[in-house]
Length: 341
Ligand code: FPP
Ligand code: MG
Image (cartoon, rainbow, N blue to C red; front, side, top):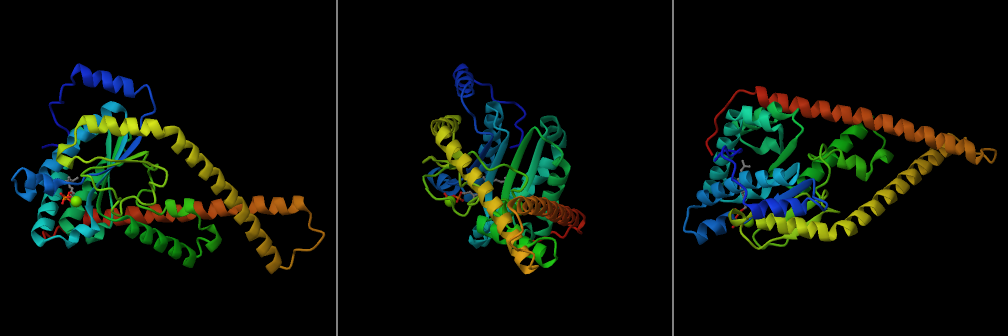
Protein backbone atom coordinates (compact mmCIF):
# COMPACT_ATOMS: atom_id res chain seq x y z
CA UNK A 1 0.00 0.00 0.00
CA UNK A 2 1.05 3.54 -0.78
CA UNK A 3 1.71 6.30 1.79
CA UNK A 4 -1.01 8.25 -0.03
CA UNK A 5 -3.92 5.93 -0.87
CA UNK A 6 -4.93 7.02 -4.38
CA UNK A 7 -8.61 6.37 -3.97
CA UNK A 8 -9.41 8.26 -0.79
CA UNK A 9 -11.91 6.33 1.27
CA UNK A 10 -15.28 8.03 0.86
CA UNK A 11 -16.57 9.33 4.17
CA UNK A 12 -19.98 8.22 5.37
CA UNK A 13 -22.34 11.01 6.51
CA UNK A 14 -21.83 9.92 10.14
CA UNK A 15 -18.04 10.40 9.81
CA UNK A 16 -18.52 13.80 8.25
CA UNK A 17 -20.84 14.86 11.07
CA UNK A 18 -18.47 13.54 13.76
CA UNK A 19 -15.54 15.37 12.18
CA UNK A 20 -17.56 18.61 12.06
CA UNK A 21 -18.67 18.27 15.69
CA UNK A 22 -15.14 17.49 16.93
CA UNK A 23 -13.81 20.49 15.03
CA UNK A 24 -16.05 22.82 17.04
CA UNK A 25 -13.79 22.07 20.02
CA UNK A 26 -10.00 22.20 20.38
CA UNK A 27 -8.38 19.69 18.04
CA UNK A 28 -4.79 18.59 18.79
CA UNK A 29 -2.34 19.97 16.24
CA UNK A 30 0.27 17.33 16.94
CA UNK A 31 -0.54 13.67 17.68
CA UNK A 32 2.06 11.05 18.62
CA UNK A 33 1.30 7.36 18.18
CA UNK A 34 2.86 4.19 19.60
CA UNK A 35 1.68 1.70 16.99
CA UNK A 36 1.75 -1.42 19.16
CA UNK A 37 0.29 -4.89 18.68
CA UNK A 38 1.27 -5.92 15.12
CA UNK A 39 2.60 -9.34 16.15
CA UNK A 40 -0.37 -10.14 18.37
CA UNK A 41 -2.61 -9.16 15.48
CA UNK A 42 -0.69 -11.51 13.17
CA UNK A 43 -0.98 -14.35 15.69
CA UNK A 44 -4.67 -13.72 16.29
CA UNK A 45 -5.32 -13.87 12.55
CA UNK A 46 -2.92 -16.78 11.80
CA UNK A 47 -0.63 -14.61 9.69
CA UNK A 48 3.14 -14.33 9.39
CA UNK A 49 4.66 -11.62 11.61
CA UNK A 50 5.79 -9.75 8.50
CA UNK A 51 2.19 -9.51 7.37
CA UNK A 52 1.20 -8.09 10.76
CA UNK A 53 3.80 -5.34 10.34
CA UNK A 54 2.63 -4.66 6.77
CA UNK A 55 -0.94 -4.33 8.03
CA UNK A 56 0.52 -1.93 10.59
CA UNK A 57 1.98 0.20 7.81
CA UNK A 58 -1.34 0.24 5.94
CA UNK A 59 -3.06 1.41 9.12
CA UNK A 60 -0.54 4.22 9.41
CA UNK A 61 -1.33 5.45 5.88
CA UNK A 62 -5.06 5.32 6.68
CA UNK A 63 -4.61 7.12 10.01
CA UNK A 64 -2.63 9.94 8.38
CA UNK A 65 -5.58 10.59 6.10
CA UNK A 66 -8.01 10.72 9.07
CA UNK A 67 -5.67 13.11 10.85
CA UNK A 68 -5.50 15.48 7.87
CA UNK A 69 -9.30 15.48 7.62
CA UNK A 70 -9.52 16.50 11.26
CA UNK A 71 -6.98 19.30 10.90
CA UNK A 72 -4.18 17.49 12.76
CA UNK A 73 -1.14 18.81 10.95
CA UNK A 74 1.67 16.91 12.65
CA UNK A 75 1.93 13.19 13.44
CA UNK A 76 4.87 11.46 15.12
CA UNK A 77 4.99 7.66 15.05
CA UNK A 78 7.19 5.10 16.81
CA UNK A 79 8.16 2.83 13.93
CA UNK A 80 11.30 1.16 15.30
CA UNK A 81 12.84 1.42 18.74
CA UNK A 82 16.57 0.92 19.40
CA UNK A 83 15.32 -1.87 21.72
CA UNK A 84 13.79 -3.57 18.64
CA UNK A 85 17.33 -4.39 17.41
CA UNK A 86 17.25 -7.09 20.14
CA UNK A 87 14.47 -8.98 18.33
CA UNK A 88 15.34 -12.04 16.22
CA UNK A 89 17.57 -11.48 13.18
CA UNK A 90 14.66 -12.48 10.94
CA UNK A 91 12.26 -9.96 12.45
CA UNK A 92 14.75 -7.09 12.45
CA UNK A 93 15.50 -7.97 8.82
CA UNK A 94 11.79 -7.95 7.99
CA UNK A 95 11.22 -4.53 9.63
CA UNK A 96 14.28 -3.13 7.81
CA UNK A 97 12.96 -4.52 4.53
CA UNK A 98 9.58 -2.83 5.10
CA UNK A 99 11.38 0.46 5.80
CA UNK A 100 13.60 0.00 2.72
CA UNK A 101 10.58 -0.60 0.47
CA UNK A 102 8.31 2.04 1.99
CA UNK A 103 10.88 4.83 1.91
CA UNK A 104 11.78 3.87 -1.68
CA UNK A 105 8.06 3.97 -2.49
CA UNK A 106 7.83 7.39 -0.88
CA UNK A 107 10.47 8.61 -3.31
CA UNK A 108 8.48 7.15 -6.22
CA UNK A 109 5.54 9.19 -4.94
CA UNK A 110 7.40 12.49 -5.06
CA UNK A 111 4.58 14.19 -6.93
CA UNK A 112 2.10 13.19 -4.24
CA UNK A 113 4.42 14.44 -1.47
CA UNK A 114 4.57 17.78 -3.24
CA UNK A 115 0.85 17.82 -4.00
CA UNK A 116 -0.05 17.22 -0.34
CA UNK A 117 2.89 19.42 0.82
CA UNK A 118 4.00 16.86 3.41
CA UNK A 119 7.34 17.20 5.18
CA UNK A 120 8.74 13.81 6.23
CA UNK A 121 11.32 13.70 9.00
CA UNK A 122 13.03 10.58 10.30
CA UNK A 123 14.13 10.93 13.91
CA UNK A 124 16.52 8.67 15.72
CA UNK A 125 20.05 7.34 15.85
CA UNK A 126 20.27 6.84 12.10
CA UNK A 127 23.91 5.76 12.20
CA UNK A 128 22.70 2.39 13.56
CA UNK A 129 20.83 1.69 10.29
CA UNK A 130 22.20 -0.16 7.25
CA UNK A 131 23.79 2.35 4.80
CA UNK A 132 21.27 1.78 2.00
CA UNK A 133 18.38 2.59 4.37
CA UNK A 134 20.25 5.67 5.60
CA UNK A 135 20.45 6.81 2.00
CA UNK A 136 16.80 6.28 1.10
CA UNK A 137 15.74 7.93 4.37
CA UNK A 138 18.01 10.91 3.68
CA UNK A 139 16.53 11.17 0.15
CA UNK A 140 12.98 11.42 1.51
CA UNK A 141 13.91 13.90 4.25
CA UNK A 142 15.91 16.10 1.89
CA UNK A 143 13.26 16.04 -0.82
CA UNK A 144 10.37 17.04 1.44
CA UNK A 145 12.11 19.36 3.91
CA UNK A 146 10.55 22.61 2.65
CA UNK A 147 6.93 21.36 2.78
CA UNK A 148 4.82 22.90 5.53
CA UNK A 149 1.19 21.83 5.20
CA UNK A 150 1.63 18.62 7.19
CA UNK A 151 4.53 16.99 9.02
CA UNK A 152 5.14 13.29 9.51
CA UNK A 153 7.91 12.39 11.98
CA UNK A 154 8.91 8.74 11.77
CA UNK A 155 10.87 7.73 14.86
CA UNK A 156 13.13 5.01 13.56
CA UNK A 157 16.06 3.55 15.52
CA UNK A 158 14.84 5.81 18.32
CA UNK A 159 14.58 5.82 22.08
CA UNK A 160 13.94 8.87 24.18
CA UNK A 161 16.79 8.24 26.60
CA UNK A 162 19.24 7.88 23.71
CA UNK A 163 17.90 11.15 22.26
CA UNK A 164 18.36 12.96 25.60
CA UNK A 165 21.94 11.60 25.99
CA UNK A 166 22.72 12.74 22.45
CA UNK A 167 21.32 16.20 23.28
CA UNK A 168 23.47 16.36 26.41
CA UNK A 169 26.57 15.43 24.37
CA UNK A 170 25.79 18.35 22.03
CA UNK A 171 25.53 20.70 25.01
CA UNK A 172 28.81 19.42 26.49
CA UNK A 173 30.49 19.93 23.11
CA UNK A 174 29.05 23.46 22.91
CA UNK A 175 30.55 24.27 26.32
CA UNK A 176 33.93 22.73 25.52
CA UNK A 177 34.08 24.61 22.17
CA UNK A 178 33.44 27.86 24.09
CA UNK A 179 30.12 28.48 22.29
CA UNK A 180 28.12 28.12 25.52
CA UNK A 181 28.56 28.76 29.24
CA UNK A 182 27.44 26.03 31.64
CA UNK A 183 24.92 28.50 33.05
CA UNK A 184 23.30 28.76 29.57
CA UNK A 185 22.02 25.18 29.93
CA UNK A 186 18.31 25.15 30.56
CA UNK A 187 15.27 22.98 29.81
CA UNK A 188 14.55 25.12 26.75
CA UNK A 189 18.09 24.73 25.44
CA UNK A 190 18.17 20.93 25.90
CA UNK A 191 14.80 20.87 24.14
CA UNK A 192 16.44 22.47 21.11
CA UNK A 193 19.16 19.80 21.06
CA UNK A 194 16.71 16.91 20.65
CA UNK A 195 15.79 15.24 17.34
CA UNK A 196 12.37 16.86 17.74
CA UNK A 197 13.85 20.39 17.93
CA UNK A 198 11.79 21.61 14.96
CA UNK A 199 8.45 20.45 16.41
CA UNK A 200 6.15 21.67 19.13
CA UNK A 201 5.43 19.04 21.79
CA UNK A 202 2.63 16.54 21.01
CA UNK A 203 -0.79 17.57 22.30
CA UNK A 204 -2.06 14.00 22.36
CA UNK A 205 -0.25 10.66 22.57
CA UNK A 206 -2.10 7.48 21.65
CA UNK A 207 -0.81 3.98 22.41
CA UNK A 208 -2.60 0.91 21.12
CA UNK A 209 -2.59 -2.72 22.30
CA UNK A 210 -3.56 -2.18 25.94
CA UNK A 211 0.00 -1.53 27.22
CA UNK A 212 0.01 1.48 29.52
CA UNK A 213 3.62 2.64 29.37
CA UNK A 214 5.60 4.96 27.12
CA UNK A 215 8.36 2.45 26.26
CA UNK A 216 11.03 5.15 26.01
CA UNK A 217 9.08 7.21 23.46
CA UNK A 218 9.09 11.04 23.64
CA UNK A 219 9.55 11.00 27.44
CA UNK A 220 10.77 14.61 27.47
CA UNK A 221 8.23 15.93 24.96
CA UNK A 222 5.08 14.47 26.58
CA UNK A 223 5.38 16.10 30.02
CA UNK A 224 2.20 18.11 29.30
CA UNK A 225 0.57 15.90 26.65
CA UNK A 226 -2.76 14.16 27.03
CA UNK A 227 -2.20 10.40 27.11
CA UNK A 228 -4.72 7.94 25.64
CA UNK A 229 -4.23 4.20 25.99
CA UNK A 230 -6.50 2.07 23.82
CA UNK A 231 -6.80 -1.69 24.11
CA UNK A 232 -7.21 -2.41 20.39
CA UNK A 233 -4.21 -3.82 18.46
CA UNK A 234 -2.65 -1.30 16.04
CA UNK A 235 -3.88 -2.91 12.74
CA UNK A 236 -7.41 -2.88 14.25
CA UNK A 237 -7.29 0.85 15.10
CA UNK A 238 -10.27 2.63 13.54
CA UNK A 239 -11.36 6.22 13.01
CA UNK A 240 -13.65 5.74 16.06
CA UNK A 241 -10.62 5.12 18.28
CA UNK A 242 -9.10 8.33 16.92
CA UNK A 243 -12.32 10.26 17.62
CA UNK A 244 -12.39 8.87 21.14
CA UNK A 245 -8.75 9.96 21.67
CA UNK A 246 -9.69 13.47 20.55
CA UNK A 247 -12.71 13.57 22.87
CA UNK A 248 -10.41 12.51 25.74
CA UNK A 249 -8.10 15.42 24.75
CA UNK A 250 -11.00 17.88 24.64
CA UNK A 251 -12.20 16.77 28.08
CA UNK A 252 -8.75 17.41 29.58
CA UNK A 253 -7.81 20.39 27.41
CA UNK A 254 -8.25 23.18 29.99
CA UNK A 255 -6.41 21.35 32.81
CA UNK A 256 -3.47 20.54 30.51
CA UNK A 257 -3.36 24.12 29.19
CA UNK A 258 -3.35 25.57 32.73
CA UNK A 259 -0.60 23.21 33.89
CA UNK A 260 1.55 24.03 30.85
CA UNK A 261 1.11 27.80 31.25
CA UNK A 262 2.04 27.53 34.92
CA UNK A 263 5.17 25.61 34.04
CA UNK A 264 6.10 28.13 31.29
CA UNK A 265 5.90 31.10 33.62
CA UNK A 266 7.85 29.19 36.28
CA UNK A 267 10.56 28.49 33.65
CA UNK A 268 10.77 32.22 32.81
CA UNK A 269 11.15 33.04 36.51
CA UNK A 270 13.95 30.47 36.90
CA UNK A 271 15.75 31.91 33.85
CA UNK A 272 15.62 35.46 35.27
CA UNK A 273 16.94 34.14 38.59
CA UNK A 274 19.74 32.25 36.88
CA UNK A 275 20.80 35.37 34.88
CA UNK A 276 20.81 37.44 38.07
CA UNK A 277 22.95 34.89 39.91
CA UNK A 278 25.38 34.66 36.98
CA UNK A 279 25.82 38.46 37.00
CA UNK A 280 26.43 38.56 40.76
CA UNK A 281 28.96 35.73 40.41
CA UNK A 282 30.80 37.55 37.59
CA UNK A 283 30.85 40.79 39.59
CA UNK A 284 32.23 38.99 42.64
CA UNK A 285 34.92 37.36 40.50
CA UNK A 286 35.83 40.75 39.00
CA UNK A 287 35.63 42.25 42.53
CA UNK A 288 33.35 44.93 41.07
CA UNK A 289 30.59 44.31 43.55
CA UNK A 290 30.70 47.06 46.09
CA UNK A 291 28.11 48.80 48.17
CA UNK A 292 27.89 51.73 45.72
CA UNK A 293 26.46 49.45 43.01
CA UNK A 294 22.79 50.36 42.92
CA UNK A 295 19.90 48.13 41.96
CA UNK A 296 19.34 49.91 38.64
CA UNK A 297 22.86 49.30 37.43
CA UNK A 298 22.67 45.64 38.47
CA UNK A 299 19.41 45.35 36.52
CA UNK A 300 21.14 46.85 33.47
CA UNK A 301 23.93 44.29 33.79
CA UNK A 302 21.36 41.47 34.06
CA UNK A 303 19.62 42.74 30.91
CA UNK A 304 22.91 42.85 29.05
CA UNK A 305 23.78 39.38 30.33
CA UNK A 306 20.45 37.99 29.03
CA UNK A 307 21.09 39.55 25.59
CA UNK A 308 24.58 38.05 25.44
CA UNK A 309 23.20 34.66 26.50
CA UNK A 310 20.60 34.79 23.71
CA UNK A 311 23.34 35.64 21.21
CA UNK A 312 25.52 32.71 22.39
CA UNK A 313 22.56 30.34 22.14
CA UNK A 314 21.70 31.58 18.65
CA UNK A 315 25.25 30.92 17.46
CA UNK A 316 25.30 27.49 19.10
CA UNK A 317 21.98 26.51 17.45
CA UNK A 318 23.30 27.65 14.07
CA UNK A 319 26.28 25.36 14.66
CA UNK A 320 23.89 22.47 15.47
CA UNK A 321 21.81 23.09 12.31
CA UNK A 322 24.98 23.12 10.26
CA UNK A 323 26.13 19.82 11.84
CA UNK A 324 22.76 18.20 11.16
CA UNK A 325 22.76 19.40 7.54
CA UNK A 326 26.27 17.98 7.08
CA UNK A 327 25.18 14.65 8.60
CA UNK A 328 22.28 14.34 6.14
CA UNK A 329 24.45 15.39 3.19
CA UNK A 330 26.95 12.65 4.12
CA UNK A 331 24.13 10.10 4.30
CA UNK A 332 22.86 11.24 0.91
CA UNK A 333 26.16 11.06 -0.86
CA UNK A 334 27.64 7.94 0.65
CA UNK A 335 28.31 5.07 -1.72
CA UNK A 336 25.37 2.66 -1.67
CA UNK A 337 26.50 -0.54 0.00
CA UNK A 338 23.67 -3.02 0.11
CA UNK A 339 23.91 -4.79 3.42
CA UNK A 340 22.31 -8.13 4.01
CA UNK A 341 19.87 -7.99 6.93
C1 FPP B 1 4.84 -2.76 17.39
O1 FPP B 1 4.15 -3.99 17.35
C2 FPP B 1 5.23 -2.34 16.03
C3 FPP B 1 6.50 -2.26 15.57
C4 FPP B 1 7.68 -2.58 16.38
C5 FPP B 1 6.77 -1.85 14.18
C6 FPP B 1 5.86 -0.79 13.67
C7 FPP B 1 6.13 -0.59 12.25
C8 FPP B 1 5.20 -0.34 11.34
C9 FPP B 1 3.77 -0.15 11.64
C10 FPP B 1 5.62 -0.17 9.93
C11 FPP B 1 5.95 1.29 9.74
C12 FPP B 1 7.03 1.43 8.78
C13 FPP B 1 7.47 2.62 8.33
C14 FPP B 1 8.53 2.63 7.33
C15 FPP B 1 6.92 3.89 8.80
P1 FPP B 1 4.89 -5.23 17.99
O2 FPP B 1 5.84 -5.79 16.96
O3 FPP B 1 5.54 -4.84 19.28
O4 FPP B 1 3.73 -6.27 18.24
P2 FPP B 1 3.31 -6.90 19.63
O5 FPP B 1 3.18 -5.79 20.62
O6 FPP B 1 2.01 -7.58 19.35
O7 FPP B 1 4.40 -7.88 20.00
MG1 MG C 1 4.81 -4.52 21.21
